[in-house]
View 1 (cartoon, rainbow, N blue to C red):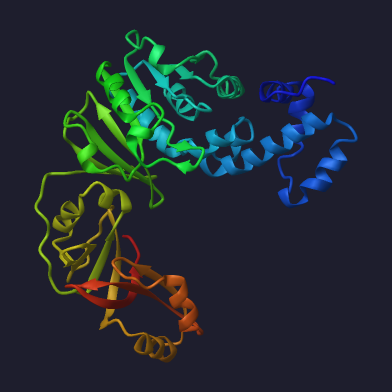
View 2 (view 1 turned 90 degrees about the vertical axis):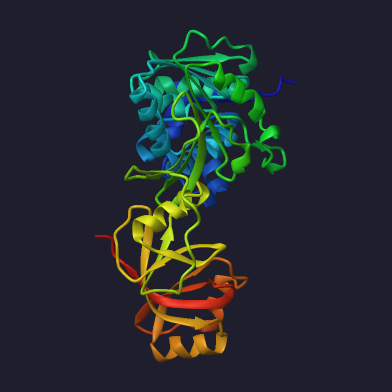
Length: 396
């Protein structure tokens, strides 16, 4: 009986001319037709190669959302690598920060499939990319080659604890935050643990640690800068920076790049709902910088526990979406159904914060029908369940 094909063997087959040609032909394949596609391809190619190519084609399709089609369809991935990979826009932002700090060489510990190493290399930084999994290292090496960056990216298969980072200007650590049972929420259960990563960062002139955006603020070391990053309104990650501005809390919003730095302001006062409601970006909320946005907008909170800001004047902000409020009413389903029916509301954006009502369940009950639209905000105002109706305000 022949020896079973190992994951490394299967990946090596994808790098042959036959494997690459097979992958190129699967760029637009439909996963729902996988059985028919596999049957057809196995007439001309080994079954193991077809299986590996179909798996890689699925991973590339998933990777497009993070890397864009141009890169994703030239790169290679592992399932965990796609799941944990940094979105390209976020990796580019971080690489530019390292570049601005004068970093010319960097040790990328827990490099995964090499997404961050690629962004760093494109910024002109020489990268040592380290991972302990042999398949992951082969994938990272293939990606550096595929994107023409092999001269700037050295891939090393090793335990990160055994790597001497002293020759490098900076260290970047992206600990594994997923295990056999899914996402890991305890930072000390990361691989390697956050405490180890922090000590590795402190040993370098400059360093950044990628962590989950829900990290408790009390877990942030006093000598670190903490940056929360969103892309297109979705919070993607938090980063602990060392060798920059210790104690700083920052929210960075991509793709525009607006960056809000905390100033230690007290919580804003609670006030009645005014003409405008502002919804701070998730990165602002995670960074605990709602007070800074409220000051910029000359506004207050609608409730001391709810991150909505209100004011009577319209002010443009890169850090919050604005809504013009037409109705402030105690929550009442019967009343709301009557309003949307009278106003012929067929399209509604339903938002909630501090409400037990589920938006999709409410949408079904409202039976929306008509040519008009509105925004419905389910929240609390001064502790009372409230529904706010209004319209989004276009950014100036």
